[in-house]
Image 1: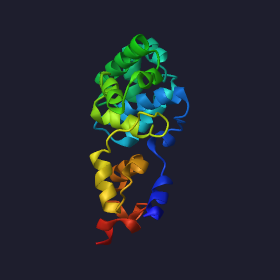
Image 2: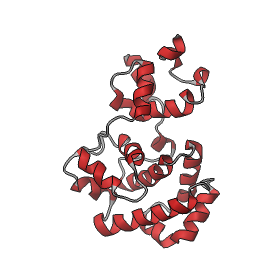
Image 3: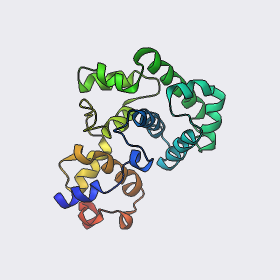
Image 4: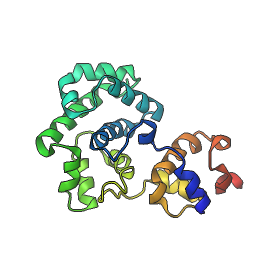
Length: 203
């Protein structure tokens, strides 16, 4: 079991793939933006590409998002392939940035004001376009960094953990979800880095 956990930990999380260091406050806001993109029913490939386009254009701070305006945001989202949700997401990003600056000042202040893990989730869910999926995506990678970042493991993580016989789900939730999306759902067992310990694969 420890071998499986070790192998899972070697898999890069989505924030790591994007080159973000979540120990840095500025990268925590960037990950918040990325989490909003990942939360839609769209491929992780497009979400990653679109975030990188936002980053290339310097649109990864609340101030920059607001200064860009709706038309510019739609343009950049489209250039990343995020065409299905471009209008609504541009609106959401503007609303999120405005609310964050006016009510909190920073993404870290959201955590500071929360009195518990559940309240933190409620505060984050209060941002437009950040539903339960977005909250989980954002917080599961902040475990160990924010003391109150401890969401209930997602169904995808639980499902993958069951296949691998992993009980310590919280430790590797991000990797478990990634495996589910990029290997299990695509039935790409042969390419999966932990297929040898997968109970379903070994049947």
